[in-house]
Amino acid sequence: MSSQTSEGLRERLFNALDLFIEKKISSKEVEGVCYISEQILKTASIELEFQREINSAKMAERRYLLEMKKEEKEAQKLLQDTLDMVVENEGTSQV
Image (cartoon, rainbow, N blue to C red; front, side, top):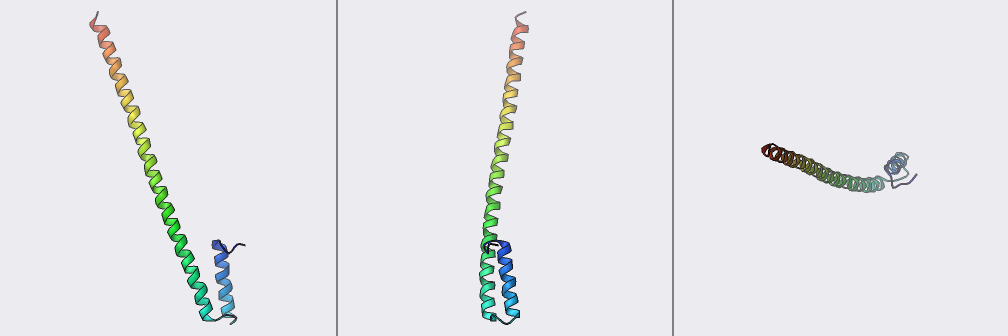
């Protein structure tokens, strides 16, 4: 398993804990492992939040574009209805 995944990080943390309990590494070494793990988690959290913001902006842009298309279709329908009414009125006024 790759140590560059959340599962790998978890495994290394538990391994460090086991080694500490077995008195095979010092508390300073455990602190170092914990510090590095914390930095990795903070970085992942920031990356995740950034991706959420990007996705949110993309969704807002899509909603805006869909609304514009809807308004454009409504405007076209209104224009067509108006033209139909004008043509109809011209036909009845010539009779």
